[in-house]
Length: 100
Image 1 (spheres, rainbow, N blue to C red):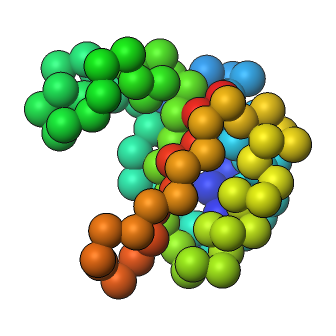
Image 2 (image 1 turned 90 degrees about the horizontal axis):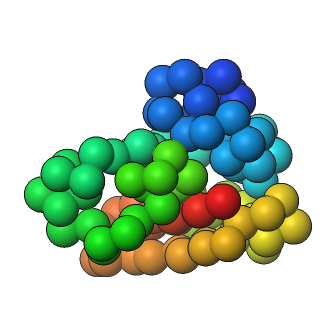
Image 3 (image 1 turned 90 degrees about the vertical axis):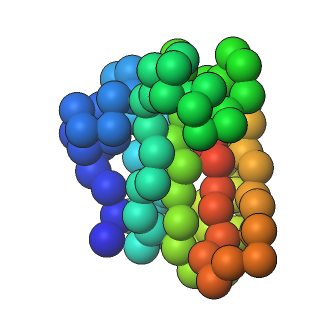
């Protein structure tokens, strides 16, 4: 199920602008959000990079079918993404990081 703009802002902690951009980049596609805002301490604890967009409320991580993540990746920069990283780490699900 695709996240709503309200969920991206309210529940996942993105700024209103980042939530708006992420919502339009996702475009109603079937994905699940796995991460949004993180405190600096939480980001450090999970091995996130220093200065991460997550700590600035401007990043979201998504999982879903590879083809769906690929479609979002193609359109991410059209909606203001400054980072769009598509990763696969030997698991069944791919991960897409978007920062705005």
